[in-house]
Length: 108
Image 1 (cartoon, helix red, strand yellow):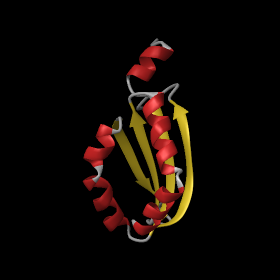
Image 2 (cartoon, one colour):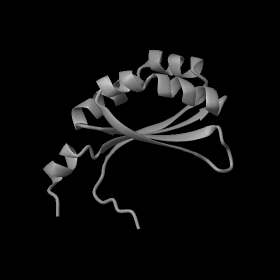
Image 3 (cartoon, helix red, strand yellow):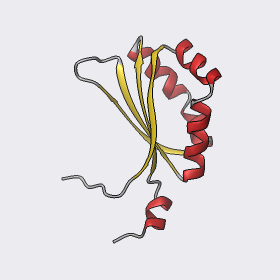
Image 4 (cartoon, helix red, strand yellow):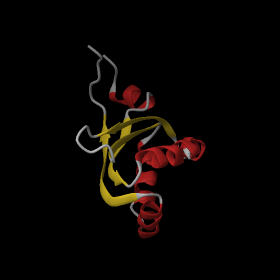
């Protein structure tokens, strides 16, 4: 069984974001263009989902290499000017955001 420290080293700190966007395809294209910037900010992976009953509601999970980088990103996203940029990028609602640490994960 892996220790808590090795779980973090494997990138188990995640930032969960829930947003509603005006145009999913446009938003996704912008997101993918920003991947190099996200990588420089410590993002090591992501999972992007969208709701079945509303294809413009997205759930984004960013995986970080450290709690410090994840917290820094969360702080940047939560700034008022980030809210304005999010609205300009097609987000209708700011939605919700939270940090979590993976304690178990398995594909069955």
